[in-house]
Image (cartoon, rainbow, N blue to C red; front, side, top):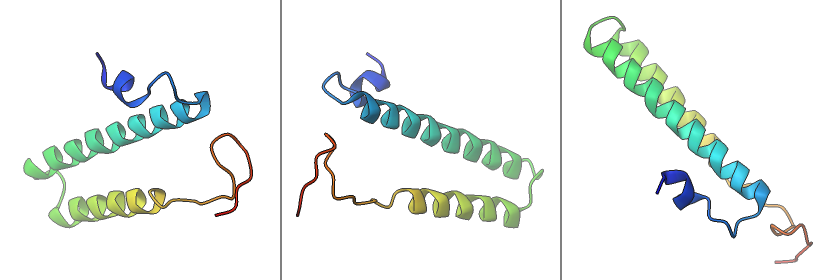
Length: 82
């Protein structure tokens, strides 16, 4: 069983499943590039200041993209009033 089958169940809407796949790919990309930054820093190829700036920017982007955008519609596209 893969991680994708755990996160994207068959009961999800196709659009939501696509969003979750894209989110997983983006998270994997951030993790791999941060690992490369850490390796470069550990071999003194990248200065500490630059490595910290990259990490801070990743955290800023992740926090900014994690904000919930509320719309007056549910996942089925129907209008609801909360």
